[in-house]
Length: 535
Image 1 (cartoon, rainbow, N blue to C red):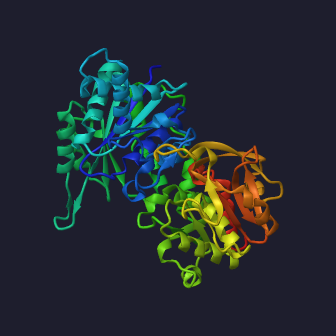
Image 2: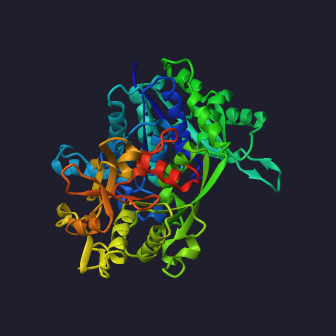
Image 3: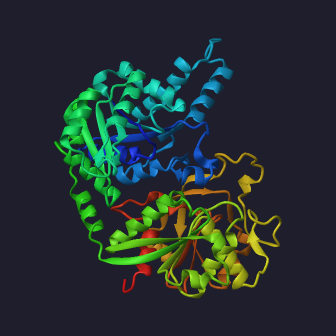
């Protein structure tokens, strides 16, 4: 069977939920027994989001092979339950960088390098790379941005050409649009959708399916009108209504037979006649009827945009589902936490999480929160910078190293508890130079971490440039600080914890990137367990 290519575009406005739609379709096709991969095309000129402000982009999602990618890849992995790679996120920056390198090498044999065909061929090559992965049946490609954006035009032209390259029977275009409801008129409007499809058709793409994002049910006569004006089958006009949980979306799309429409159009002979969603339905049922509630405080630098910590928030929810608990997240700006107000600010929290971050702003507030959690026996979980600051806080306030600090945050500190990785000493570029991707971690027998994982060696994803300074390791351990996870060569400290505390664990790696809604990450699971009464 030929590889099938599905392209997901968006119109009218951004942030429509194209990523959730694409991920939901991927889940349905996977549960039909098909081998699915998925990718995101981002039209910005950055090589990747690694150096972008979280306020601009949200979180940077890291794959097993160390690619710094769009947060939509987190949705893809969580929904479809697959591990993606660097082929799964393509930017204009990557495309142009590759084209220019080829031009410098002389690959174009003296020709004039142009958007068509050279840039569009490079884009198509990125699609075909995903299709050439072992045993892939379907490639779903989401095009970032909105139809009509000037920066998206080369991507739209490339996916238009793919239909000619691989055949109409192997390509499908799915277009997401907004159906606004005007309270003053008391009705929904289809005109923005009609104009969006007109814009898409002007670049040579006729959508096969239209997904209508809406707050409420779309009347049948409006769907028929859209089908007529946009020249598609009326059954291929599908609505995607607001849902109480994102995990309801695949079920809503299945109820409208989106996966069947796709399989019929592409002549996909799936091993299963329909998607087996029993486990997924049980998940949604559980999510909709949680009987307990706990409150977790996240003390961070970028809390004004919760998407900066999207995978952490989702991982906390996944862990809560295991214990029939609704996890309510309270966001605390670390710049507003002080030694004097930490107890008052955080006293209602059942657990405290200090996540990653870069730069010195808000660091002292994070350490005040860590000290409060440590001294008040409040369950604490630190991630990346959170782990580093937990180490510094312990050195300062337990060992009395008043000038303990991170070399990232203080120039030439007297006691650099956290220091630069040796291999980073001569690195000058910021982008793509961190310690990135999946690395092994050896767990200490009898530790909280070992009990959580139940394995001696685990693999987790990383994104950091600084590390725990082993010069101070013995002194901290003698004072009760437990190094419970290290690299197999015993060189890098990966997990630290306190044994005389209900739950005080911090990891250098990012456990949130591997959590799944039906399979929570072990450290998140145990953190939530400790925050629940009587668990």
